[in-house]
Amino acid sequence: MQPLALYIHWPFCLSKCPYCDFNSHVRDTIPEARIVAALRAELAFEAARLGPRHLASIFFGGGTPSLMAPESVAALIADAQSSFTSDDSLEITLEANPTSIETAKFRAYRAAGVNRISIGVQSLDDTALEFLGRAHSAAQAMAAVEIGRAIFPRTSFDLIYARPGQTLAAWRAELGKALAVGLDHLSLYQLTIEPGTRFATLHGRAAFTLPDDDTAAALYDTTATIAAHYGLAAYEISNYARPGQESRHNLAYWRYQDYAGIGPGAHGRITLSGRLLATRRHRVPEDWATRVETIGNGSVAEIEVTPDERAREALLMGLRLAEGIDVKAFAARIGHRLATVIDPAILDQALLAGYLETTSTHLIATAEGRKRLDSLLAALVI
Ligand SMILES: C[S@@+](CC[C@H](N)C(=O)[O-])C[C@H]1O[C@@H](n2cnc3c(N)ncnc32)[C@H](O)[C@@H]1O
Ligand code: SF4
Image: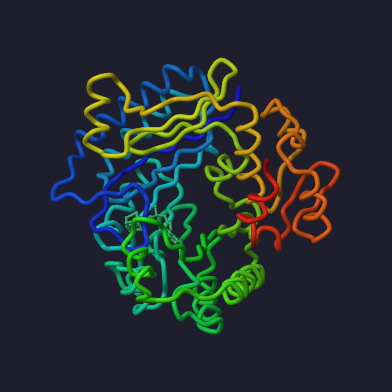
């Protein structure tokens, strides 16, 4: 029986951050009862077709799931636990914004079963937080982290770096402060300009400039070095953890294991009767809810992932991980040899250049390779 990861999408935020292209929506009044009822219906729909599975993780992502009432979170966790088998190692993560509205609910989320909190701190610099359009100060964010740490067995937070004008020295100091908190996990993202966001418009008008490629590369390198100094390994391109404290849920994506995704815009990859299905839900919350209410699920399209596509997806995911790809497990899961989707000449070049390496069991993108993974993959994967 394949382990299962469950993703639950909460599609609302209090305001839209200018850099963010996640499926998040701002409403005067959030129709929570309706959305929770539809999420529960979709969970029942997935459980019925998946059958008996061992649930390894649940992830409440968003949007801002910390806007949910703890009772809503508790109901979904209870549904998931009664639909699938699980044990004490079940990881239940909730993404939270660090304002007082959310921290006031942390204890109730813990009582609901959440055992890992991931807080969107984004920066420890108030000017940068303003630039990022955040509704909290650095002090508020760090207070939320302390509250999280006192309540949850596992706490992580997100920072965005490689911001306009950010010097290496400034980032070193900010990251040092973040690591000195002493958590077991951090997500450290380089700022990307996503199409359709307010930052895309501003950047298009040259209202700000991002660090050039060399500076971005230096920022990336220094991030891994300083994190390692504090005992956190770069286990994925943007994720750092003490050994054993990696996000099990996110590892399921990168190891290309089954995950069910429910809620507006959620994606999933689930094995049904030996076929791997790519699932996707309507993005607009109200349209999605209407579909769930009429036909029991909010799916847009469900297509079987062909062996070639599976191999490509697994490569794209697996090479993000420092551990790389377990070649034997890959063949078993994909029903395909790795070699069939890799350009052999590019592979040789990448091995020679030190961007990729092979062991007796794994294909691995080195730290240098992970730094330029997008262009490496674009050339490598056929
Ligand atoms: C779904 S979001 C956030 C969780 C929560 N709503 C919050 O804002 O605190 C997940 C994370 O992705 C990161 N992120 C989103 N857009 C980004 C971008 N354009 N560049 C870099 N990081 C980004 C942020 O660090 C954010 O916390
Ligand atoms: S970063 Fe978080 S709070 Fe901001 S719009 Fe995206 S999901 Fe919402």
